[in-house]
Image 1 (cartoon, rainbow, N blue to C red):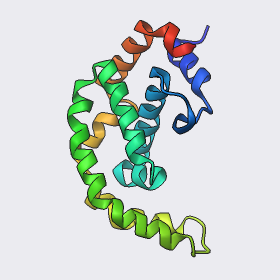
Image 2: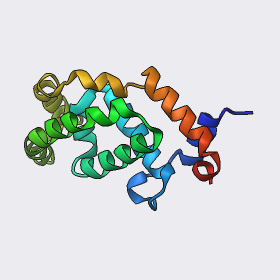
Image 3: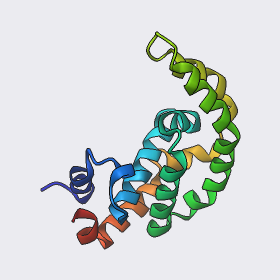
Image 4: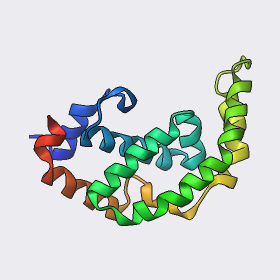
Length: 151
């Protein structure tokens, strides 16, 4: 029998949380998408991949962290939001320029090289897939809300 986390992923796999009705599962999916970007490429990658809907995604993730009682992650989000707001105009310009580029991926590479180090914060590690306090909070939340999250 698949574990609870696998069951949640099976239920929500392929669901675009930006187009799903509000629910705890939607918020947890936002959190997982945010964590995936943070693990893979940090704040710069998250902003690029979720622009211009980064704020809605981060709002959903924040609701999930609050529901899970993931206090360290909640405390880290204001600094991450501030960094994203600082760099969002630059990201928007780079994305606009990318519309005229012919080499796939080139626009992101240029963006990432210029932004990754300047956007990086130590708090990013709190959102990595293997962060123990986040994993424990998520599993406890899944267990306590099994029926709602798997519906």
